[in-house]
Length: 401
Image 1 (cartoon, one colour):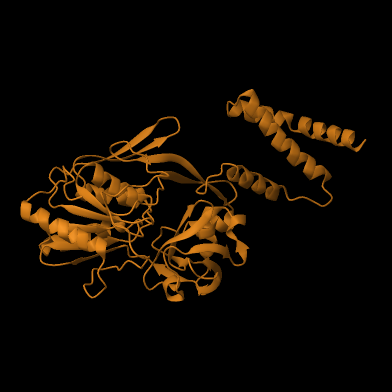
Image 2: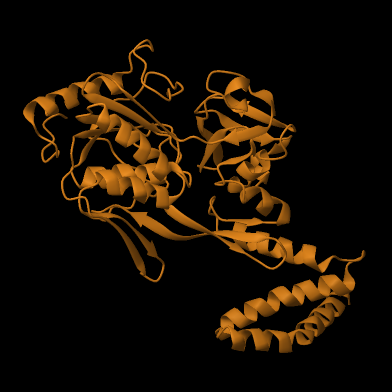
């Protein structure tokens, strides 16, 4: 009897929203199957609204429905942002925000620290690249949409966040970290000797292109004849800054392309006719997204040799779409490709010369000869000095590897 009553009530709920569904289907030019599925969702929502034992907040139900739809995509980079999370996210690329100064990657159902900003609360607390975040404020990350973890870690300056950290060879440990204003400077440069420049890009924010040009001009005035471009522990960022930098060092032609599901393709190009100096790019397994795009463009166009280890493999494009209740949808909408047509998503950039570090260490912002020898940097120096002596700029052959 109860089953019959439920079926009748559910059928009534479906009928009650049939006109609405018909209008939506017509307006959005939906096929019968799509219209039917929308009917199922609204029918369930209406039945819950009428029959649940307590009064129901319809807005909360709809938020849950949207969140569930995004979770069903099984994509760690697509998430639903309620008003609180969306407000935090909008601070991400503003150049300054309340946080702890770490960049994270989401892979194999885990959240891993890719890099830690120098002098940040995270560094002062002892966090390091390679750490796995197990829980945020006591909530296991497996219960949170992966990209939401980063948003939850941000917050009001002066407030604390507890992170449960898993580190190889150690017992899990909780770190209590006080959030602070994170002022993001992303490009650092110095001369290694009288002809080699070391330029480190920590991540790609909205000001990184401008910062890179300033550093590049300073190193050229100092007599740079070869460049070590360090993208290790660089988690990526905005593609616009990546393209701005690529136009300064990638030979004329394609830099990268963005391809959507329907095949729509946006191509970014360089007009640099004559590269001025040979470049060695340093990558590691924490180099992701825009850093992989820049490295891939330099590798494909023979403008650089890649030294280090295979990069992270994050080659998808997300867009944030504001909705109607101070909330938003962050959704993967396309994939990046290098000039040769390679997709880096899930595969990364393979180095021309593989040199794996003996252990994970913080990458210095600037070159310092007093720091214990870095085998990747030493190899880059060796190759560049040989290149400068031979007068070759482009890496048309891989004789160095």
